[in-house]
Image 1 (cartoon, rainbow, N blue to C red):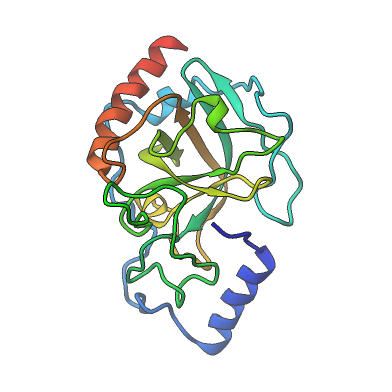
Image 2: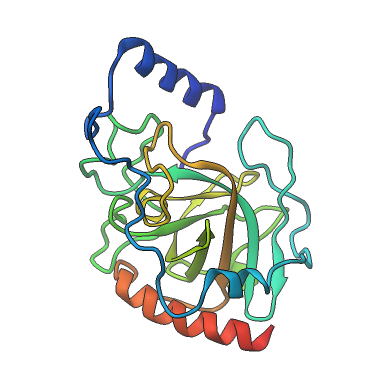
Length: 235
């Protein structure tokens, strides 16, 4: 996980435009990267989940920034069986090197993730939907709130639900980041240098949950759907 800079991101995009260069996997005629892989995962609708998180009972001791340059405006909120926040989405490409997640595509690339696959290797951001949680600090301690590596997260954007796992940790004062695969599944531009979205993403993390193996997205969807229905019943 890296500290992102809006200035650097803008500069990278400007440099590509000035040079007339397109990313390696893009062309002027290619399909937009914002095409979602799926419109809905599981049986619980985005609208039903969002109806349960309209108000915030703040459990964090302060608020988080969404980027290094922004002010702290995002609290972590508590519900029965879950915590949630509403933020932006920056793209995390950390973990195993793949076609779209590597040093050439991502200025902040790191070859490891906080949590690992069942074989001990880092996660694959390009293929596995995962979410980044802020590292524990005086603002909030995720593990103390029942959130663990491999825990299930319902990520909601533009009336779509994507089930992900807690896969990486980030800066202590910044929130709102998920893997390349999470963004792609929700129809968000997944380019690690210039992609993401500035607002409108809701992250619902289910307490004391764990997907096994962590790298199985189908297992995350199955467990996530079960926990989402339980969340609706208990809130």
